[in-house]
Image (cartoon, rainbow, N blue to C red; front, side, top):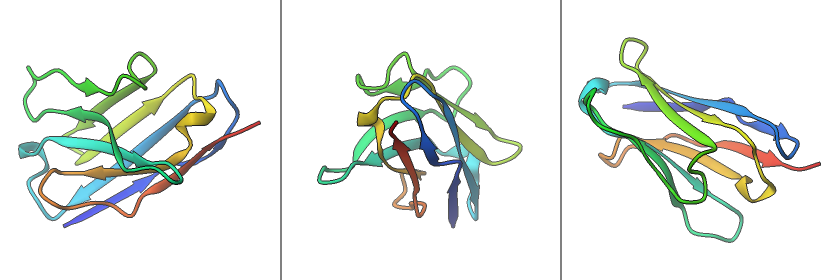
Length: 113
């Protein structure tokens, strides 16, 4: 199993980034996919989750609801996190997971002027 995140970087407050997580080694379409983040000195927290059926509605943490959008492409085996209106408190390492104990290496997002 491999989960490879990309798309992180340095962005000014109010800016946008789109994270990608490319998956391989398992049947991607069967799994609920999630994005977590770990800010410096804090515990890892759930950011967003997307189900494995077309009818399932994504879940978001209160901190990002209305600003972030999770989506998936079951042909490309990739899950995305579109992050808009970024704030300094969004600074963290962002990880994707398939909920089966598999995690990516993370991608750093830094929001700073």
